[in-house]
Image (cartoon, rainbow, N blue to C red; front, side, top):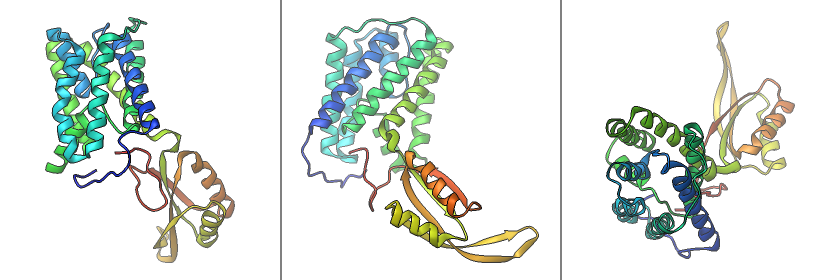
Length: 293
């Protein structure tokens, strides 16, 4: 994401509209059926809006809209015009939904509120992001801060939310802040899964003496692109001076394909060393983008 990003496609596609509308409905349901009636909080701009709503009893939709305006403007320069427009319309729609659509209060059990409130809020945020927008400007602020500091975006968001939870503990109850942390954790994990889905990309690194056979299997049988690093294997405690050159094979697959890759490699070389790692925001090559900006 950068300020020179150019987007030549339409402002909205049908899938964008479906994702954004479903995201708004899911988030509104979480807020009005779980969080607001039980005086619960979340992280991010949504959490700040809920905190102001609880302390000063101001209309939640209006607060959410006002607090996000600076981030919408900022996102225009950090992410892109279409992202800013989508986000602005999404926030306006959620404000209208909160004002005019009635959702039933489903439970007052605090654990259920934290779990399902966080779940449906996370679904709403994730669907909105898949539609190319957002209704919480915290990540935009984190991106701006990231460009000005040495901290990662994850560390910045965590720090901002810790500050929100501390303020919540001061103005409300400590228990409320603790439940807010649980709600935020569930929402953030749900958002991550909705964005990445079952197609979340995973990097697989393979070190084997039979690397040639493994390379052929990955490329010719599975139609996977690979990258090969030149390395050495050996260096055991009892034979440190002994090593052999080896091709280290790296490929990116979806989460569902990891087991299949492992089975293929194990059939070729049962002693092969394999490790997997989550791949964040892969771009270029033969890897398709999941989340549009």
